[in-house]
Length: 620
Image (cartoon, rainbow, N blue to C red):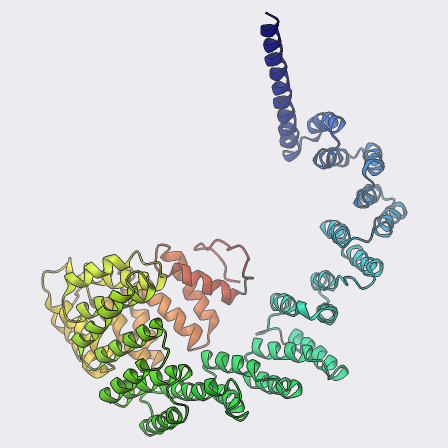
């Protein structure tokens, strides 16, 4: 009986505790609700009770808000002073100053703000927190004073230059912002990347000439002041790269390399960057500088390979290419390979030489020999060997050895079944089946590849699959599709005149056929291959205007945006078409990449939240 009474009492007690907990939650919810809706008198009743029970920060802030909104400054002042006695946090002085300021007591307010600053302990975190409180109340001068006081009391342990620079940026004082950011690097060179990122967000290097000049002049001043330091030289190099002034970047890095007697690693990175950005002349300067260091330099082989690659890429930008220059380049490849021998660093050269032979000098046998030589390179990784086999398969396709190509890609598919290389080989085999008119087999392979973890392979598979299904299901006549696939193959083989004849014949023989927009897209691709960008744009625009509801419109928009961004160097036009793609074709395969590029052109920070794109959105 006693045991039963104890258990009963226990449950009664638990129930009371639970009711009290629920009541407390209800009071907090109601207090917050009335505060949010501006019913401060009602909110006050709850917050006075809540604060009396628990003077935690949220209850204090809610009660203070009620007092100030109701202009009950006497009670607000009492509350803040009470909080100061309990917790002695210097940020409460800012609350007190705000109350005085609301009453027009400027002297008392300034005194309270001074107390908030001068009562700061030697704590980096509390200095930042206090400054942020001032910033939140739009008192930037006091925030700046807080950081300067923090710099003093921490005595060289942390300069607050990053935070001060951000404040100067908000205040529109670019000169002082730049100076503070550079002071941070002077304090610790480890902040170099941090400062570059911050300046990249703060300065428009394309249009803000005045601010760019301020940065350049400040860097030059500091270089002259401390010529032994390489940090500002690195910053100058970074500045030149933001402006795409690759030649000045090379001059600067070369000076650093010589001053420090380095091995040329910085120059090699710049050379590769120049090649990727089609700045081939500067890339050649970089590679030749490394070559002049001699064969003992660890980057010598890479430089010999790089200078040839850069020359090859430059020759490929002209249509038709300069045959004599290509033959000279082939001789240079041969002599360089004879000098360096078959080593891992020369595998890339062998692949490039094979491409040169097959695609530009009509020498399939030479390309075949060259790639087989690459396969015989000692200690070759299996993955690299597979890549070479796929390269050889593509060259065989280009020279019309279709089934030999299929055999090679099947080998790679078998050896790397669940690897990216295997998926790439399977996609190549699916394309071979498509080129030869075996659409059912191609479709079966493409269905497997649609689920590939590689977005690029998956998208390519879905695009080709859509082409086949869209045009095979709508018409029982196979001939147009077979002809189109043949023209596609001829395009891959760089037999552009023959491809154009077939494409035009489809339009003439079957006017209004479902393939029409695809034919226009193919003509645009051929125009791009011939570097006739204006003609390519003409075809893309026809698709967008005349076949806006076809399967090629989103593709045309993306390709045209890419053309404007990377070939015609017109980012505003590119941004316009990326936006149109996102708005009009939200389910497109290209939307993710288009959004990424749109944001990059707009200048968003990498971690910035994506703003919603709608038909009414303004492109800033």
